[in-house]
Amino acid sequence: MEPQVPKKSLKRAVSDNPEDIDARLRLAIYYRKDNNPDKAVKILEETIELDPKNPEIYLQLGLCWAMAMLDNVPVIQLWGREMDEELMMEKAIENLETASELDPEMTEAYNAMARLFMIRVQEEQAIDMFKQSLQIDPAQLDVLEELQELTGRPVWKLLDKETYMGEEEDI
Figure 1: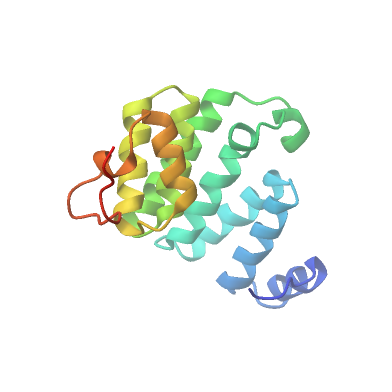
Figure 2: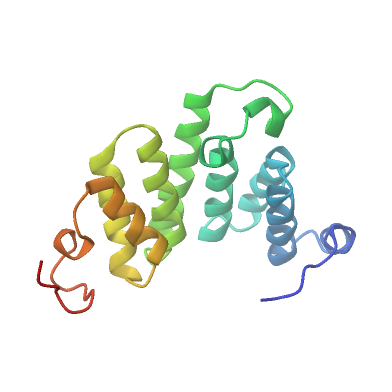
């Protein structure tokens, strides 16, 4: 794991080189993880102008918009104002879909969309997203557990035959 770069250093890097996509992304991720999605979104929206085909930017935007729902934190606490949660949900899903279109291997986007669909009680869509993610990386134990909990069925019965989940157990 790479060491945490201080916020001041990231801000300076962006200030010194406004075209530095990596520094901008790292600063936005810092703000998101520091429960300040508003600042992160501003940076990410500026960064899209510089690199509109970068799936990581859209992933981070989606995660920012989804924070209140996924982390179960009051919107006003995260954003400093009331916001329409349905609009936030739409923006989150739209950005996560764009991320997955730009990088079809981005499991984090599929997993976040699945969790948002679970919140919306759209179980079929959630199951589909989890399945897509597991076909890319079948070793995601947390996703396997969530999918099994969501369906109430053993995961190996839910996935396509091409996704190897170990030997079948006799029940």
